[in-house]
Length: 109
Image (cartoon, rainbow, N blue to C red):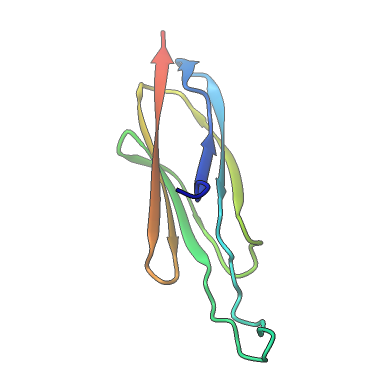
């Protein structure tokens, strides 16, 4: 199996009401559709268009992306640790392909 296509860095546990940083990296070419290959043929557009994060079933973060974003998008954001649960990360591209990754967060009293 090759290298992971998506990586998420976040704490496994946090105290209730702590602000935590979440960092994500997604391996993707983010091809604009404006470039040509070695023989002059257009390279088809292929970009991630939507990145979302759901925390225990509730959407806490969403961003629309475009061809202006570099390959292998890195996105970082903050959220508040409110309860123990799963964070579901989803990357969807303009070809309709979606990659999902789930991480658990334990909230301590």
